[in-house]
Length: 246
Image (cartoon, rainbow, N blue to C red; front, side):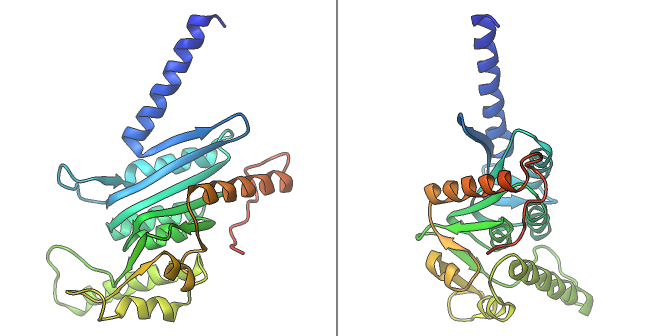
């Protein structure tokens, strides 16, 4: 390979990275030892309806195929999910959370700023979750926008959706259902609503997040998980990765 071709390949690789960041909120983080995919879930999670212009959004139809591509890639060894989200479309957020939870690749989530509303199950979906001390998480009942038909079926739908969210959070964290329900229904913290706003150390105390830590700790855990995965399956590093949290 001549020098000009090498430069062209490097330029193309940089362009792909920039396109990943612009289009899907992701980037490849690599060095001589490892290759991780970083995915950022920021702003509001856009679902079935487009959000207004000028509003930062994570488009779930872009993240879902990215997750499939990561899962099938032989080069990407682990995934770091950065969360700073106000929440958004419940069904879209839960779909993303289920995709992340079902991946065999090592996954670590890191909550920066906020992981509110449907951002809570997204944070717990990774095999290991972290939150910085200054970050907050808002836990509240399911809300709907637009016209609501005042019939029992509408309220049953919201109740069942809320149960699914609680069940997901508790099955992917150490939190107990009664604790999450209590946090959701507290009337004394949010002025015009019920629910709870919890900080980093509280999220760990309630068992929702695994530990308090920043980027350095998240990368260290991801490296350890990848190393453990290599030792377990030296011939096929993408197979049989444990989903359980210790």
